[in-house]
Image (cartoon, rainbow, N blue to C red):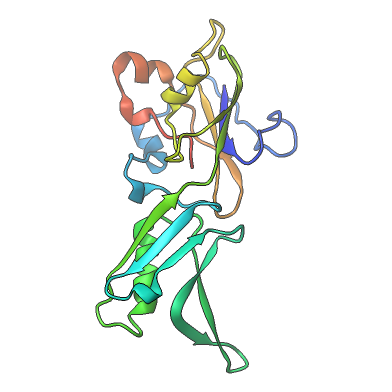
Length: 212
């Protein structure tokens, strides 16, 4: 099974546009192996994507409020703060939002606003999520593409349930997930996941999100 989250469905694993799938036999993936890819449901753990609409608020300074949809290049402006360019002229500061988590983005805005506001208190929230689609292929009952819920993420088991679960010939111990780096667009495989362990032994730490 391949489960991907991207702007276009992954092609055959040997074709252009998808990473080459490692040859997997016995699954030796541990909970610790998946730790770097595991997220909880907290909005602050969500990595922002182009198309997400965010609001940046500086307490006590409504004129600095930013309400922007993250563009394709992933950058949004910092209102009220400028920097000098090579020609000596002042220009707008832009920060990279795509691929960043909310606490990181808040810290960067706070750093910029500290130049003009003492002890600036900055909050960032997601107003709306960009449409995202997952593509579930392989030995499942209904392989297809599925739209993600509004919060922008879905777990592996939830996705398999949407696809009608496994067929009898499925290799349930070596489920593969393709993720897409929201900042670079690069696709990569997560370590193989044993869904039987999640279902029968309740090892929920291995039930990772498909996005990012």
